[in-house]
Amino acid sequence: MDRDTRLRRLAFRAWHRGTREADFMIGGFFDRYGQTWSDEELAWFEALIEEQDVDIMAWAIGTLPVPAQFAGPQMDAMRQLDFINIPR
Image (cartoon, rainbow, N blue to C red; front, side):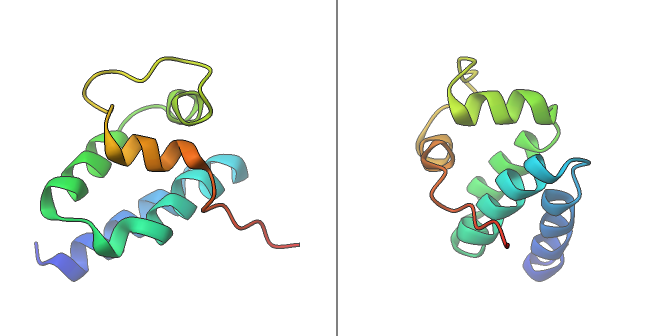
C-alpha cells in the first residue's frame, strides 16, 4: 500500500473510534504528528490503534502504565495532550 493510502486509512481509523473522547485524543494525535512519521512510527501507530480505546486513553493520561511495546518518544508525545483541539 502506498504512503498516501496508508495515511488516509490511518486517519479514518484514528477519527472513528466510537467515542468523541477517543476520537479527539487518538485522531488529534494522528492529525498533529502522522504526516511526519517514518514507516516505523506508522507501524507503531497501526499497532496502537488495535488496542482498546480505554487502554490507549489511560496510557496517555497516565492512569495505567504504558506497555513496553508502546513506550517511547511517540507515547511521550501522546501523553503531552497538547494536540487536542476541541471545537466549540
